[in-house]
Image 1 (tube, helix red, strand yellow):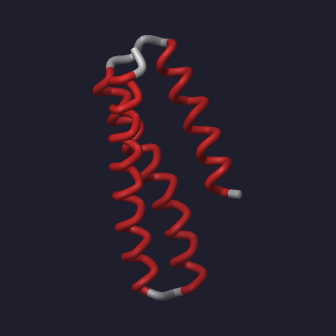
Image 2: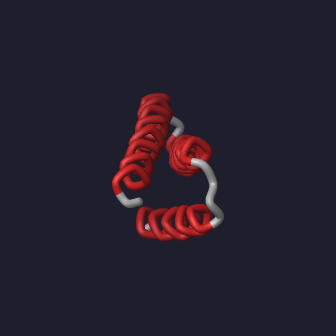
Length: 82
C-alpha cells in the first residue's frame, strides 16, 4: 500500500516538474533525494518501533539504494522519451 502511494505521488511530481521544463540534472537529484528520504522515514519509524540496529542499517542501505535506482530510472526515462 505504501509503495503504491509513494509511486503515485512521485509519478505525479515528476510529471509536474517535467512540464515545468526543469533540467535533467535537477530532476535526477530530486528523484534521488525524494525516494531516499521517503524510505528513510519509513525505516526510521520501523527502527523506533522495533528497537533493532540491524533493521536501521538495512533501512538506511535500502533508502540510499532505492533513491539511487529512482534517479537512474528517471535519467533513463528522460533520456529515451524525448
